[in-house]
Length: 389
Image 1 (tube, rainbow, N blue to C red):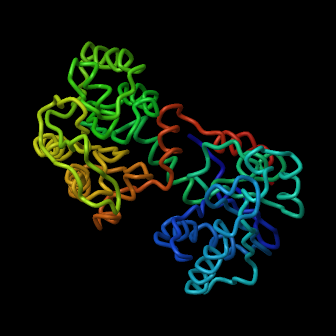
Image 2 (tube, rainbow, N blue to C red):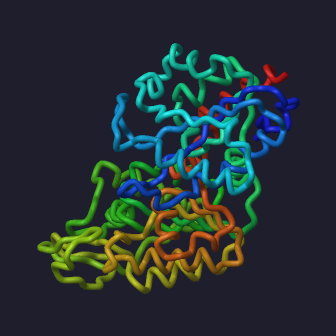
């Protein structure tokens, strides 16, 4: 996929640039707990400054303040951290401004033309480096390219380059690992991937709808009954096409009276079962045999894509499956791509976030790109290409 890049904006000297970043970082008690999304765009910002940009107006959303100011979602902690990082690089921070949370204004999510007009006023260029928001047709994403010479920043371009490579020319065998809660959220991704991968490994809560499609008993586990027939179709299509979909053969379950989740007291009985669960028991992790089988598939791959945990990894009792998969992805010699979101959080929790080839900054955006092959933010940049100066 061809996108306008930073070099296409030259000459930058003396110009004012609006830069959309994705600084939607986790913050606890006013402190940023993971600054990856702030560190990565520094390459874009420093390039613009080094090229002589007169001023950078940087903007981002943070959380979901629902169209009105909310101190909980103030951009101020991000501002402090961003400027500290820029100063360490010797960047001219007096030429940088970070706007307050874009979502404080309802015009952002509504893609209000008046809000777009306010954003682009006085600007000469636009750079989109917010891959994590590129699947949103919001004002700051799709609006500025209609009015300004525009380009993809380094983060966004690298994300598209990697994910497009997965879809167009992956080294084989290509193994995809999908987890997470709801199969309904990922059926489109599964169908898209089945045309690309050699093997699909399915864990997490979404596996139970597939297991039900095989006639298995899922107990009290998460089950989307209205999607059982669709999962059966996917399994049949894979079998007829020679593709492999591997489902759990053993499951770690919690008794019906149990309590689970991050920080919860370890109440209830844990037990390992085969692929069938007793009535009301909750399947909360793949079992050790499944985790080992998944790890073997990953070890034998040439390309690996992982999105979604294998269980409720936030609860230590049900983290083993996700940890095994994370360690396999981190140690494989294959080209490894992790699709952001909870998978990225799991890698960080296990201290493995620097052990993969590409860690995406956008979970939802990466999945939508794989499913549809394009995103609103990317289309906006391509359509603006003829406006480059």
